[in-house]
Structure formats: structure tokens, C-alpha cells
Amino acid sequence: MGRGKFKGKPTGRRHFSTPEEMLAGTSTRPRTFRQEVAEAEEEEEEIETGSDEESEEEAEKQKGTQGIIEIQNPNLVKQKNVKAKDVDVEKKTELSRREREEIEKQKAHERYMKLQEQGKTEQAKKDLERLALIRQQRADAAKKREEEKAAKEQKKTESRK
Image (cartoon, rainbow, N blue to C red):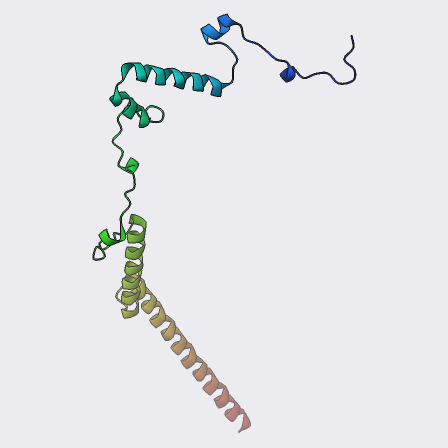
């Protein structure tokens, strides 16, 4: 018999597990149902044993391998909520490493600029030497121009006579 134009998808077919598959645990039941059954079995076992210690341990169920391996990580400490009346206003907050380095950098730059203005740094000394050399060259050039100008005027006055 023909199905017509549209074929059924394989996801639409139902699959019923056999009792053997169910006992072996290889059935294709939804995961949530499996978990519910497992939790129900655990609750029955707790009721039978009647131990309160085990129920407390399960209440603090840990993720992954946290229950197996003990980790000494200071970053895993849970944040404590501090009440407003317990806060120490007098206590000075410590700066982070980046903030501290940034402040140190700014202070060092200010010190350097102050020494630069006073002319005590190597760079300032070099700059002052260059500046003195340039001033001397300009003064020499100005004197030479004055001499040339005076020489031209002298020639003009001699040629008129």
C-alpha cells in the first residue's frame, strides 16, 4: 500500500522496550523517568536503613569529582553576607595589584617630570646642551648677517663716491 506523497519520519515511530531490556537497563525510556525511579529507590533504601547521616550528605550533593577529591582552593570560599551593623568603617580597603601599579606609575611619572623641569635628568641635560648649541649657532648667524649687511653698505657708499 502506498503512503502517498509524504513519508513518515523515523522519529514518529514508537518503540516499546521488552521486559528483558528494562531489567538490563538498556531500554530507551526518557532520562527523567529513569532518574525519578532511581530517586524513589534511594528514598526506599533510606527509609529501610533509617540513617540520618547519609541523608545529610546527600543534601550537600557536590558536583563532579568534588566529593572524591578535596580541593584547597581559596577562591571557592562562599561569600559571607556582612550586616550593615557589623561593617568596619575604619578599615581601609586594600587596592588591587593593578590599581596599586597604576598609582605607582603615575607617581613615578610626576617625579620624573618635576626633575625634568629642574633639568636634573639626563634627557633634560641633553636638551639643554642642544638648546645652548642652537642659540650659539643662531647668534653666530645673526652676527655674520650683520657683518655682510655692513659690508654691502660700505660697498654702496664707496661706489657712490
